[in-house]
Length: 113
Length: 113
DNA sequence: TTGGATGCATTGGTTTCTTATGTATCTTTG
DNA sequence: CAAAGATACATAAGAAACCAATGCATCCAA
Image (cartoon, rainbow over all chains, first blue to last red; front, side):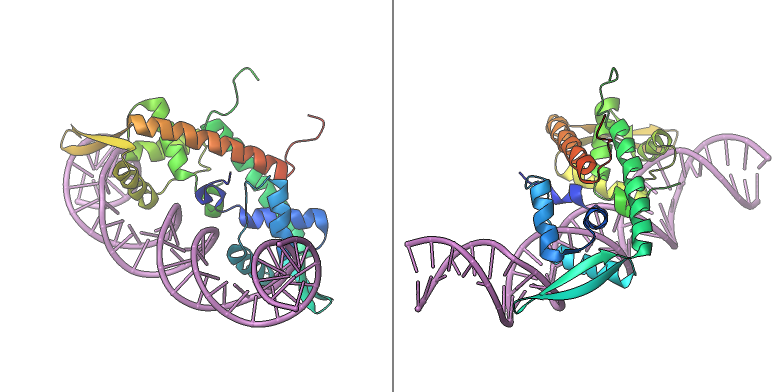
């Protein structure tokens, strides 16, 4: 099962940034795999979506990169900048608020809970 | 305060359909106002987003319409078709599942809860 | 009588994502 | 050892969903 792409829309940046908060540094491919395993294949980040997003976050100054070589293969690690860490907290808490609003709007909690 | 539009993306249809589940019939403008008041102005549905969405849902056969006149002013009521009701349940429960995934991914619940 | 609210709708542009493609290396398997 | 699949980066074309702006029209209150 995979969530409809419409549902997942708008959450990619937040997910990536939160992962980087917990893991200090990660590379693109690793992120796609981590999300897949953490969500039991329900969210699959495509590379066509991820790489432009990473580049955009870097251009915004929220991520920094460092390139490593594994044999002859390039691996580009991303880390949160100080600004990125701040923005991540803001984004995550905004998302938390939004989720509560959705739970209320969609009546997802039994009233007796 | 208003949620960033990026965050709200992809939830419009679900919200509209759920509202129609609870209210039998509603018209466009009413929907925008209801969402505003239910969310304390945090979600503001623009008309440029809403009307095309309503038309799309109608074209999909999920909504039916009936036009009424208030004085000389047209008011177009939307209701869920039987198919629409089924789809709404599916959408809402998919959204519930997705929200749980996001809560897990973003670590939004204290582990001792 | 003018501004604001009500109520419909479309158009042009942007953001965000998908699908497809490209290049290259490494590993596993028949 | 050849081929397929995994690893790893990236871009380009197009679709989907949305926003901002605008337009038309009615109603009401100041």
